[in-house]
Image 1: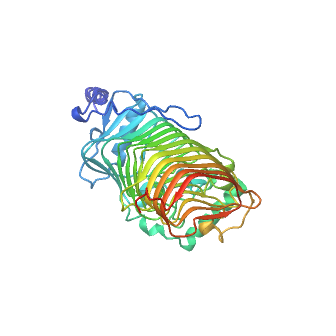
Image 2: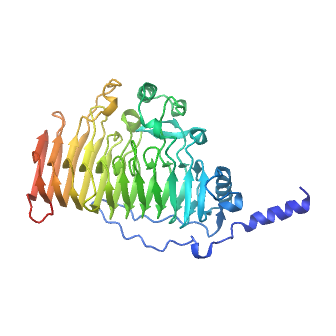
Image 3: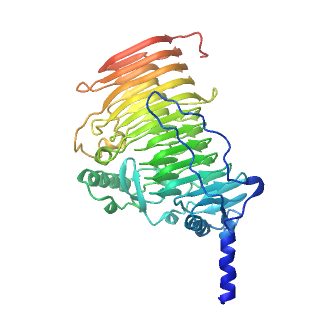
Length: 468
């Protein structure tokens, strides 16, 4: 390259950040975030702020059409944005195929209306392995489709769509012997405190599917406006993060373990105005598994409001990975969508004798469901799933569960009002049901084992005020 051409090239790079998109100008999100209220101390979360400069991915070589992989072009745009002090990387209208997208500090990825960012199902694209966690156990695994680690001020926004091609991941839904042996190995590595860097499991024998979106140890995070379709595993997974906002999201992912959103060991999070249509639990609060959870931090100060669940195993679940502790969770003004909506349980707390930790200060208020196939409130202290016969208990630790509150709850039909199985050594303590109305109960209304301080006020079973 001649000196003249080199100078022209460098000057062109300097002009790239100043490009804007006219009617799709992403610089300002005008929809205000209402003040956050909660029955515990909760900060007023604000969106991260980004420099008013943009980096369209097609300027960096991305080719529209949904055929050409644009992983490298998107990476170049993100690096340029980060090195320029931050701004917004634009995904313009059209279909754009890519592998993993790794964000950097002070970078916002804007998927504009009419744009679809499509993630390949060619599994080797998601190598090299990244630091992650799988069902509460820290490890190195395939990259999430969108990933960030140790970043501040990051966002994925826009009225466009994020789509996971799931065909390549679907065969991994099964749990063959090689997968189960991998889980056993990882379980004992965590129990022994083996350094995370040595827990390498990105291989086709382990079959450990990554989340769609995973942010690890990030601060000041925003997800807003997006339509998200399909996922290899959990859909949105903020892990050990602080100050996270997820709002105005339309999430649909049906398949094995396709939870909607799973804040894990995360502090200060707002989830609002979201729609979840899931193949597993809709909203799940987690805090690590056993030894890794005990070495970690609680998941705390989580507010969920104005969300609609179309389908999910549980409306709101806590656990079973919760060894670091879960406290201060407030869900209010949420609903199950129409007569076709389906969940098994409105609020489900799940743990076992290996978890330890605590679940406390949980509040669910002003929530309506036309039907739950099991209980309105369920607490189970012996949930082991596939781990029960797979591995031995290394350290037996019970979970302290206390101060669980449901108020202004309306359910058309349910099998139980409340089903709680506490431990004789450590009973569940402090459950309050206030103004709870259930139109019809098909089973035993109250199934209680080792529960102390249960209070019911204005609980109406067979309520004529509820549409059955």
